[in-house]
Length: 484
Image (cartoon, rainbow, N blue to C red; front, side):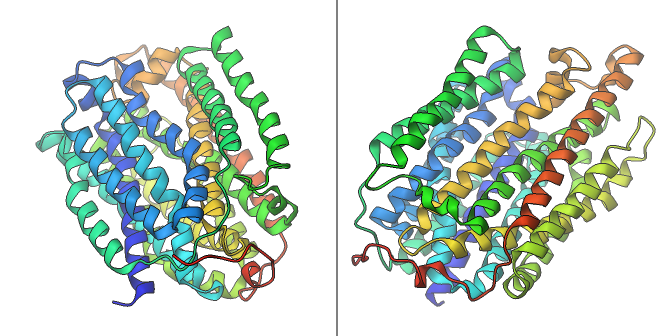
């Protein structure tokens, strides 16, 4: 196996594991909470801590990868993720599980931050869309496996196996990675510790405060925490503009192609991930389907997206991201609008054709947009840009959760919305009028998602047309690399 194929195999495996872990945990959460004798407000952090830590750390982990070696750091992340999976599987209580999920998230941040950089190191610009198509394929296959395995394992086996299944996959990927992946260069830049501290503080305060406001209400404490996090971005940006070796090179945002591609990814994360949560609420809470049946209705869309992602990646290499990515978001808008028409009597099988539309949109969008971002990154900063992209996507994922719970919770009590979201209850056990009211709340949340996705599509189309042979690493001066 040559080095490029090995790099693609390892990165696809990492993407697949991350996708499995995200969907499998959502389905297993009610069972985990029951067996660990946890309450909803505590056990939900077994999911949220992963989103929070990956959102906070990915930019920094990408920067460290640039300095010490992206492939080396990617492999180390796989080892940490695998060890964290084992620890999660042997957790004696809910607090231990949350702590070990944080360990797993640290490894996940190292993987997510450097995966795109490893691809960019091993594939030329004109073939990166094709390579990122395979990573999108890995994500969709992983999501399908997570859905299926989550239902099967929690139904017929011990929930702890949702973590143990990561161990053989992780060991395989670590061995392949250490054997085949070699760092071609590192940079002589220094680690930006003040910037690291300011960004970590800002994202942690803002994310935690916003999540708690959605879950518990807008108390003075959480509003203050969120506002303080946002205010910390000011000192961070001030420092980054003057830092000799910044965590985020702000000059990238003067490039319209880079900045618009990053902003599009951020808004697409907010607008679309919430749809998955809302649809799960609808199928389980409104229609009363069990978790496995609900999940199986979404599988065709993931399969279609996975199959077509490499093909769409090839087209993105030829046509550029402007039309491919924008067309993909447009299909997502069409699908979400269709979901917003679902009623109390809609046949649940209508989910399948709509999910095929949104799945094909994802196959168009993700390879094209990721390729456009990494194509603009200067050699020597692939890790930083890959990490920044993952950070924005992670923050978008957190905000999508906030949007989902906050808007859907306006129609009924927050406790009812939270219980339905976690699979602890469906609306058949409540008063008849609550179902219609809750459905109106879901429709409102879906329409908000449509608005966000439309803005993302406009920004995606407003970016300059990118050509397959446009490679910033060949035209932009950077410090001379040093050997591995």
